Length: 159
Image 1 (cartoon, rainbow, N blue to C red):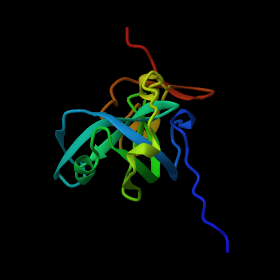
Image 2: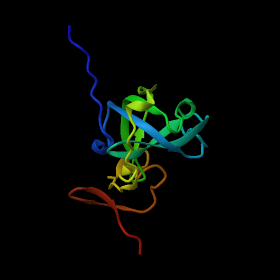
Image 3: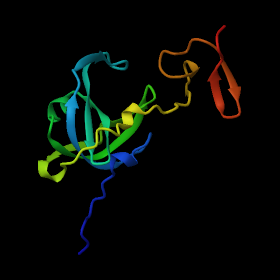
């Protein structure tokens, strides 16, 4: 009988646009909750970020709605099928629609490295294409003109 051994990623191994990550983290702090309006449905959503980490580093975990109430400071969690993405050039860990969060024994993760905060590092974001807006650096930033070079599009400087 084959034993199902789960592999867990370390915080220090995270980089932008990873999918299907399993990771164990401890929550060290949680930001003030705020509300935003969904662009697609118009519903009001709750959002915040929690600083989570392990012995190799820390990163901000974006929390939406019910996940906000589930994560508590000084508790340890097993996050399954989560992903990373960039938000304004900063790395974020996300639970998302298909991920889940389960509290585990606090003794399982004791040492934390908050000095190596991956969310404090800036990552260069490439411009993305939105079919109804043309080339832009993200939602709502379609002012200015764009010029093409070998590596893609970039915004021309305004003088």
